[in-house]
Amino acid sequence: MVRISGAAFATMAVDDAKICDLFKEAKPGFFSFEYFPPKTPEGVENLKKRIVRMKNLGPVFVDFTWGAGGSTSDLSLTLTDCAKNELGCVANMHLTCTNQTASLAEEALAKCKSFGVRNICALRGDPPRGSDKWEATEGGFACALDLVKMMREKHADYFSISVAAYPEGHPDAIDEIPEGFDSLSESEKRRCRRVTGEDGKEKVFVCRDAKFTAELDYLKLKIDAGSDFIITQMFLDADVYCDFVKACRAHGINVPIIPGIMCLTTFGGLCRMTDLCKTRVPAGMLDAAKACSATDDEFKEWGIKMGADLCTKVLAGGAPGLHFYTLNLEKVTVGILREMGTITQEQADSCRAGDADAKTMVSAQGIVSGTK
Image 1: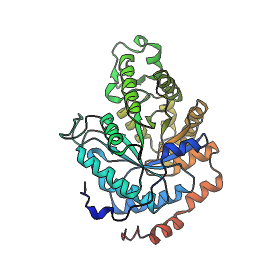
Image 2: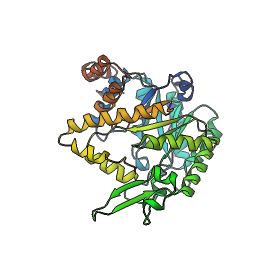
Image 3: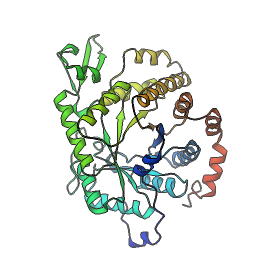
């Protein structure tokens, strides 16, 4: 993290819109895009051009992740500043507690204020690379709740704060159930993961009801501390999201709950992500995905159809909008929106054909040349 001198605040940017305010005016079915900081300068340039192209589709905001252990903190700040002040997007930045002291978090927030960025996603974060267990940093925060409390204490209502939630339960709270599917409660059966192991036997994983209730208790604490809305972890079963929203409402959690939609681009990626997150996969989905995995293009077409079906169902179930985990790619995200009829074919074609215009715009602003 770069220390901030007083000179950094000499010129304050115009304050951005707060996402929680934009939601009040947005029509149901709005959408937003999430990106992660690339590893190379060339990747950063390509991402900025992609953001320009996808901005023309009308997202309510764009979102930038904060790498594990704060590994991309400087670039996350730079991209958020760029998206807001040079590319004209409403920008939301993740801020995590991993490897982060309170003073460093405060510096990141101060820098956001200097950019006029008013939207933060407060997260605990993943364990640092090479570590299987998350541990609080000395002088830092124990959880996202601590971060939310600090932001409200020190910055009042300047920031619109979002937090994460896990419709199937946090992966750390999901256990393998040796007794099998029939031993589960009805609610557990609706969110459990069932997979066939290498030995041909079924394995069942679930966040048991008691742990699920504890997670709802914690989520309500984050909301009561001042969080404005929720973005969910990925899921592949629309009923899981709808059940989760009902459980939240019964628990007194009444803020908007935006479903996080993972844009699936490869069969291997689908398998890795669902294993890592212990995601429920509806019956037959993996077989259908594998049947369409002969080429990347064929799989992406399947991902578009599957994604559009999932989005249509969650919107019909009351979701206010959609948050797309783009994986820094546009084909599947744009394809889903077109398949749903949310954007026109002309908009989709313009996004795909807009590389030259985007490059011109980005170059003119001094981004590609590195002068900014």
